[in-house]
Length: 217
Image (tube, rainbow, N blue to C red):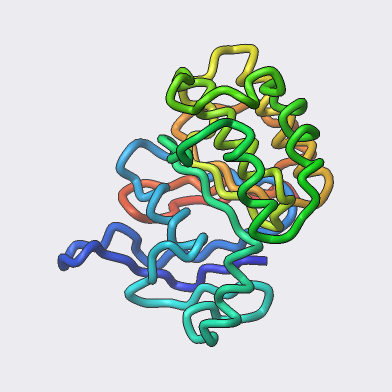
């Protein structure tokens, strides 16, 4: 479980973009919903250790991340993956992008084809990412996030740039990994038709504050 306890964050000014955030991330899908500018992306970056809170601890599997040693933090980081709304892809082919997380962890590269088929991108594995449309780049980034079976997956507007067919595909994939025990966070301003049995909770944000949490489990 990742727990944010009374988190406050500002980007160097006196104005806090996150204010007293309390949220737990456990198995299943946690939806963070709110308008653009409400603090959803910043919250995901806090939960994935990309930003350090001004106040409040981030607890990961019982360990206070920012109070842990560098070695422990590196171990915890390997459990978590964050995908930005406009994801960055490495130079080279689609295959290289999917293989990289496996190589640095010493995992079997056979997972590349498994996940490529799940996302319907097996036919473009040898394509240079510079030649991909925005929608295809989104699929590759999502596939790369799931390829090494992380414990926590944090997704910022994962359906952006996808056509209806691929939106349905990605929703189904997210639900399936949630059923298998992956803790998945989806930040969005949209209504996403997840099956209720896969949803853990929905947190509604506005102006840097969680105004309501609806729990399903």
